[in-house]
Amino acid sequence: MKIMGKKQQTIKSPVNISGTGLHTGNEVILSFLPAPENHGYKFRRIDLNPDILVPANVDHVIDTSRGTSIEYQGVRIDTVEHVLATLAGLGIDNVLVELNQSETPILDGSAGLYVEKLLEAGLVEQNADRVYFELKSNVSYANEEKKVELIAIPSNEFRISVMIDFDARVLPPQSAILNKISQFKDEIAPCRTFVFLHELEYLLQNNLIKGGDVNNAIVFVNRAVTQRELDHLTGLFKKPRIEVRNEGILNNLELKFSNEPARHKLLDLIGDLALIGMPIKAQIIATRPGHHSNVQFAKLIKNLIKQEGSKEEISMIDFVQPTHFVIKQ
Image (spheres, rainbow, N blue to C red):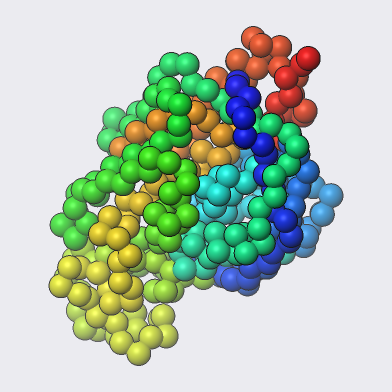
């Protein structure tokens, strides 16, 4: 553990964002509220028991199938990764996130609007020092079957590089790099989620992505599609016309960056790593990452923090909840 010169931050004033949950299809109002020092990131369901605060803690992850979901004392929060990526990417340490449904709004499939709203609210420096976990040796996770590998290397700065490869002609291998967290706002936050058409069909057939439409995801088409299928999608998503471009993307969206999919995977990774509970000093190199591997990787680092905490006799203010540390004097 290491205390750096920077102070913790929260937001100056509350801010509300409304939208639709990607998988539930429920209309939701999400509010970011200022929080005191050493509070960390917590969620509250105001439609359930408002006394229960759900910590953004990797130990509380219960599902990573189509996003990252957490649950604490019977209160569940779904699809937290974009919200958490935004907070971590802007260097915000302490925030209470309130929802009136279980799932955060998908918005346009990126973290862009979250960033915009939080910057409008403004950030305020607090008195407490920010505490980082400084990696002392390499940490790695691998799944050979899925060709997934993540490694963290000791570094003075938080850096991430991501490589994706889906063995698909319409989405060739590509990579994205974040050298400084200050680049998150402009280089990573606007990048939207993506899906292959066959995945979209499966999700729809299984009553998932009830809140999805072609405005909040880049849709890659990796097989021949008939006009009848396109007409079906046109009606399903209430669009005047849907067609496949030459590059194999539905005509719903223009790419913001040539490597926007890889950048979005980097965004997701930042959000999942925020569940560690404190910023880390490390260079992350990720090959074909996904929510499951991200969470398993975050758990490895979280366990190192626990081990070092006991070695250095760090007292924790309820480690399960705030996931912040106070150094004994």
